[in-house]
Amino acid sequence: MRDLLSIKDLSKEEIISLLDLADDVKKSPAKYANSLTGKSIALLFEKTSTRTRISFEVGMYQLGGQAIYLDWRSTNLQLGALPDEIRCISDYVDLIMARVFEHEQLAIMRDASQVPIINGLSDIYHPCQILSDLMTIREKSGSLDDIRVAFIGDGNNVCNSLVIGCVKLGIPIFVATPKNFQPHEEVIKWIEAQKLCQFLKISDNPSEVVEDANILYTDTWISMGQEAETEERLKIFKPYQINSELLKSAKRNPFIMHCLPAHRGFEITDEVLDSKNSIVFLQAENRLHLQKALMLKILEKQ
Image (tube, rainbow, N blue to C red; front, side, top):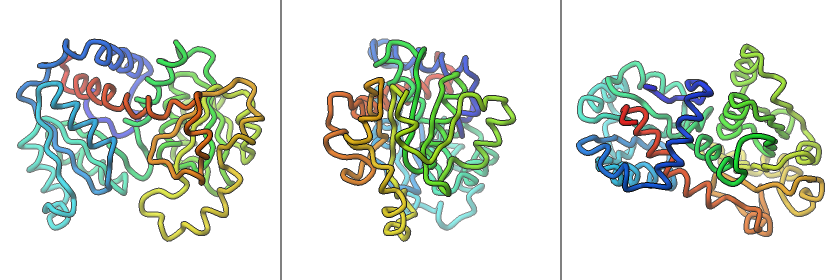
């Protein structure tokens, strides 16, 4: 494994191997405590972050290495040519993680960098989030067999990566979005090319996709950079809220997932987010363990 720009970059076997390592890192953290001594990672943030930043910073520290936080706005990333800046940064560190607005920037970084690039989030993909979510699903369910995932809301970067991760592992996923907010066309074309369409169903009916799901996932309706669309989006997405009424359509008592931050009362209600079936905060915790496993794999320490 070198760069991770999308889960498409990983084989099924690589995903399972990464999840296995993350499980072991979580179970036996002391075993890996000095694995990355002398290594460093640059964390580049064009978008703000809580979980991504902390999990990578703490994760690298716990592995014996160093993390360097770089705010896009307070560095010359906003002044110089991106390939030039990345070439220089890659002379100093062993890994670069970047959280950006446009996915194309990551491709530019990959081509300019002398070290691996990790996508910490872009407008199209969020692979680190979904890999840790797959870890969480397996942890709570005991295996990835007989899993059926439903995603309700905006077909955004989280949805795109969730779809890819599920179909890669042969997990059926049902997506309910408004008609003009479906998963990215690039994702649909990739699934068609891979002949994996049997694992994906897209609908505009939340009740329909919830019916047979044992994992129910949602995300914000308004991602960073879409604030000007807030009023319109709130009207469009109102029927796609995960609430107790919607859960009456579910036959399999699903676990509830959200990548956070949650906008309580919009995409999800308090009573659902705080319910006994919510595994939202386990998702957040597992970001740390998965990120540690990812850095170990990319730097070939496991």
